[in-house]
Image 1 (cartoon, rainbow, N blue to C red):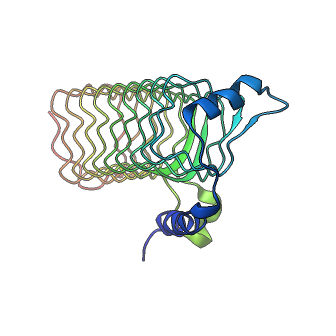
Image 2 (image 1 turned 180 degrees about the vertical axis):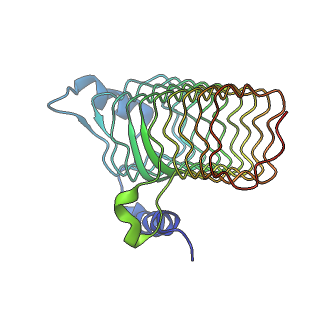
Length: 246
């Protein structure tokens, strides 16, 4: 059975596409005008707007409402989205390299193949599909990307990072319980005190990663690689298919 999260994202995307003919189409200059007049009490109304393929790099969206906006293939590199609620936005193939996404909420979203390299996503709450995304060197400290255990009747809703590039990321103090990390590249990543309880890490590459005080209890680790990883006080209680560690 397909995961509820993936199914809901597909259904939402189809619904959004069917309504696209009615969606507003804005240029960069129009977006800039809206942002220039906005404040916290009167945010720029970009809600469910069609912003596909736009170059919006370097803009400050902190006073914007982007809920449900269509941002496919848009370029938001180096943009400031600090503290925003980006739930149900459409962000497949988006460019967010170097953007500030700290303390954001991203729920029920597809970020497949997105460029999130060098982003600051510290303190964010994310339940999204990020398969194949590039998050190399991103600051992911203190994130809560653990599964949403409140919706078990509808299926396990969790962060999916299958095949994602997480090389050199800072995952210190991260909550990644039950996250999907199959074949993710975590080379030289910082996972100090990260909680990966019951995470699916089959085939993940953690070579050279700092796993000091990390918790892999009940995690799936078939064919996972730990060469040259720092394993000081790392917990593997009940881990499944734990490879031989040296």
